[in-house]
Image (cartoon, rainbow, N blue to C red; front, side, top):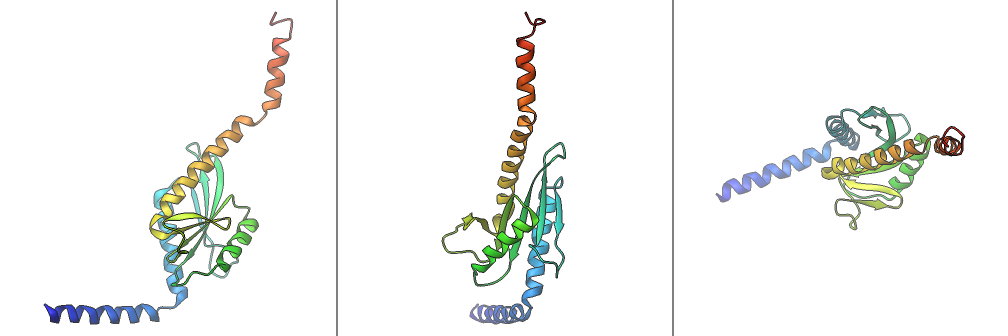
Length: 174
Protein backbone atom coordinates (compact mmCIF):
# COMPACT_ATOMS: atom_id res chain seq x y z
CA UNK A 1 0.00 0.00 0.00
CA UNK A 2 2.78 2.43 0.93
CA UNK A 3 4.61 1.50 -2.27
CA UNK A 4 1.50 2.26 -4.38
CA UNK A 5 1.04 5.60 -2.65
CA UNK A 6 4.67 6.46 -3.27
CA UNK A 7 4.39 5.51 -6.94
CA UNK A 8 1.21 7.57 -7.32
CA UNK A 9 2.86 10.58 -5.70
CA UNK A 10 5.81 10.19 -8.08
CA UNK A 11 3.45 9.97 -11.07
CA UNK A 12 1.62 13.06 -9.85
CA UNK A 13 4.89 15.00 -9.63
CA UNK A 14 5.83 13.91 -13.15
CA UNK A 15 2.45 14.97 -14.51
CA UNK A 16 2.75 18.29 -12.72
CA UNK A 17 6.16 18.85 -14.35
CA UNK A 18 4.71 18.02 -17.77
CA UNK A 19 1.86 20.44 -17.15
CA UNK A 20 4.33 23.18 -16.25
CA UNK A 21 6.14 22.58 -19.55
CA UNK A 22 2.98 23.28 -21.56
CA UNK A 23 3.12 26.85 -22.78
CA UNK A 24 0.74 29.37 -21.25
CA UNK A 25 -0.58 30.08 -24.75
CA UNK A 26 -1.64 26.44 -25.22
CA UNK A 27 -3.25 26.33 -21.77
CA UNK A 28 -5.08 29.56 -22.56
CA UNK A 29 -6.28 28.23 -25.92
CA UNK A 30 -7.54 25.07 -24.23
CA UNK A 31 -9.54 27.07 -21.70
CA UNK A 32 -10.93 29.30 -24.45
CA UNK A 33 -12.00 26.21 -26.40
CA UNK A 34 -13.64 24.78 -23.26
CA UNK A 35 -15.53 28.04 -22.68
CA UNK A 36 -16.68 28.15 -26.30
CA UNK A 37 -17.85 24.53 -26.12
CA UNK A 38 -19.76 25.10 -22.85
CA UNK A 39 -21.53 28.18 -24.21
CA UNK A 40 -22.41 26.60 -27.56
CA UNK A 41 -23.80 23.44 -25.99
CA UNK A 42 -25.70 25.28 -23.24
CA UNK A 43 -27.16 28.05 -25.41
CA UNK A 44 -27.60 26.73 -28.96
CA UNK A 45 -29.81 29.65 -30.01
CA UNK A 46 -27.14 32.25 -29.20
CA UNK A 47 -24.39 33.22 -31.61
CA UNK A 48 -21.04 32.28 -30.10
CA UNK A 49 -18.06 33.81 -31.89
CA UNK A 50 -14.43 33.10 -31.03
CA UNK A 51 -12.03 35.97 -31.49
CA UNK A 52 -9.06 34.56 -33.33
CA UNK A 53 -5.59 34.57 -31.85
CA UNK A 54 -3.65 37.69 -32.75
CA UNK A 55 -6.77 39.81 -33.06
CA UNK A 56 -7.18 42.47 -30.38
CA UNK A 57 -10.08 41.77 -28.06
CA UNK A 58 -11.44 39.28 -25.59
CA UNK A 59 -11.82 35.56 -26.30
CA UNK A 60 -15.51 34.90 -26.99
CA UNK A 61 -18.50 37.02 -27.97
CA UNK A 62 -21.92 35.65 -26.99
CA UNK A 63 -24.77 37.33 -28.87
CA UNK A 64 -27.83 36.55 -26.77
CA UNK A 65 -31.11 35.85 -28.55
CA UNK A 66 -34.58 35.28 -27.16
CA UNK A 67 -36.88 32.36 -28.07
CA UNK A 68 -37.99 34.31 -31.19
CA UNK A 69 -34.35 34.71 -32.31
CA UNK A 70 -34.42 38.47 -31.64
CA UNK A 71 -31.08 39.94 -30.52
CA UNK A 72 -31.15 40.90 -26.84
CA UNK A 73 -27.59 41.82 -25.98
CA UNK A 74 -23.93 40.87 -26.06
CA UNK A 75 -21.79 39.19 -23.42
CA UNK A 76 -18.03 39.50 -23.88
CA UNK A 77 -15.96 36.69 -22.36
CA UNK A 78 -12.28 36.66 -21.45
CA UNK A 79 -10.74 33.43 -20.16
CA UNK A 80 -7.55 33.12 -18.13
CA UNK A 81 -5.68 29.94 -17.26
CA UNK A 82 -2.95 31.12 -14.91
CA UNK A 83 -1.98 30.46 -11.32
CA UNK A 84 -1.83 34.12 -10.30
CA UNK A 85 -4.54 36.78 -10.48
CA UNK A 86 -3.69 40.05 -12.25
CA UNK A 87 -5.88 43.16 -11.87
CA UNK A 88 -4.65 44.49 -15.24
CA UNK A 89 -6.98 41.99 -16.92
CA UNK A 90 -9.96 44.00 -15.67
CA UNK A 91 -8.95 47.25 -17.40
CA UNK A 92 -8.14 45.43 -20.62
CA UNK A 93 -11.53 43.70 -20.57
CA UNK A 94 -13.32 47.00 -19.93
CA UNK A 95 -11.52 48.47 -22.92
CA UNK A 96 -12.48 45.46 -25.05
CA UNK A 97 -16.07 45.82 -23.86
CA UNK A 98 -16.18 49.45 -25.02
CA UNK A 99 -14.58 48.54 -28.36
CA UNK A 100 -17.03 45.67 -28.98
CA UNK A 101 -20.00 47.65 -27.61
CA UNK A 102 -20.87 44.67 -25.42
CA UNK A 103 -23.55 44.98 -22.75
CA UNK A 104 -21.73 42.79 -20.22
CA UNK A 105 -18.11 41.71 -19.73
CA UNK A 106 -17.14 38.50 -17.94
CA UNK A 107 -13.70 37.26 -16.95
CA UNK A 108 -13.72 33.48 -16.47
CA UNK A 109 -10.54 32.35 -14.78
CA UNK A 110 -8.96 29.40 -13.06
CA UNK A 111 -7.73 31.82 -10.39
CA UNK A 112 -10.01 34.52 -8.97
CA UNK A 113 -9.50 37.11 -6.22
CA UNK A 114 -9.88 35.73 -2.70
CA UNK A 115 -13.01 37.81 -2.11
CA UNK A 116 -14.89 35.91 -4.83
CA UNK A 117 -16.45 32.53 -4.08
CA UNK A 118 -18.16 31.59 -7.37
CA UNK A 119 -18.85 34.81 -9.22
CA UNK A 120 -19.22 38.48 -8.41
CA UNK A 121 -19.09 41.96 -9.87
CA UNK A 122 -15.48 43.06 -9.48
CA UNK A 123 -14.45 46.59 -10.45
CA UNK A 124 -17.24 46.83 -13.03
CA UNK A 125 -16.69 43.41 -14.60
CA UNK A 126 -18.21 40.05 -13.76
CA UNK A 127 -15.53 37.64 -12.54
CA UNK A 128 -16.19 33.92 -12.24
CA UNK A 129 -14.36 30.68 -11.75
CA UNK A 130 -14.69 28.26 -14.67
CA UNK A 131 -16.92 25.62 -13.03
CA UNK A 132 -19.79 28.12 -12.66
CA UNK A 133 -19.27 30.19 -15.82
CA UNK A 134 -22.29 28.56 -17.46
CA UNK A 135 -24.49 29.39 -14.46
CA UNK A 136 -23.42 33.03 -14.59
CA UNK A 137 -24.09 33.11 -18.32
CA UNK A 138 -27.59 31.78 -17.70
CA UNK A 139 -28.30 34.55 -15.18
CA UNK A 140 -26.87 37.27 -17.43
CA UNK A 141 -28.78 35.96 -20.44
CA UNK A 142 -32.04 36.03 -18.47
CA UNK A 143 -31.40 39.65 -17.48
CA UNK A 144 -30.53 40.72 -21.04
CA UNK A 145 -33.64 39.00 -22.43
CA UNK A 146 -35.88 40.65 -19.81
CA UNK A 147 -34.39 44.09 -20.50
CA UNK A 148 -34.85 43.61 -24.25
CA UNK A 149 -38.48 42.59 -23.73
CA UNK A 150 -39.08 45.70 -21.62
CA UNK A 151 -37.49 47.91 -24.27
CA UNK A 152 -39.68 46.31 -26.90
CA UNK A 153 -42.85 47.22 -25.00
CA UNK A 154 -41.68 50.83 -24.75
CA UNK A 155 -41.15 51.21 -28.50
CA UNK A 156 -43.58 53.74 -29.95
CA UNK A 157 -45.12 54.23 -26.51
CA UNK A 158 -45.73 57.93 -27.09
CA UNK A 159 -47.41 57.31 -30.45
CA UNK A 160 -49.61 54.60 -28.95
CA UNK A 161 -50.58 56.83 -26.02
CA UNK A 162 -51.43 59.67 -28.39
CA UNK A 163 -53.50 57.37 -30.60
CA UNK A 164 -55.49 56.13 -27.59
CA UNK A 165 -56.05 59.69 -26.36
CA UNK A 166 -57.18 60.80 -29.80
CA UNK A 167 -59.60 57.89 -30.00
CA UNK A 168 -61.08 58.56 -26.54
CA UNK A 169 -61.51 62.26 -27.31
CA UNK A 170 -62.96 61.69 -30.78
CA UNK A 171 -66.60 62.05 -31.75
CA UNK A 172 -66.53 58.41 -32.87
CA UNK A 173 -65.87 57.25 -29.28
CA UNK A 174 -68.69 59.41 -27.91
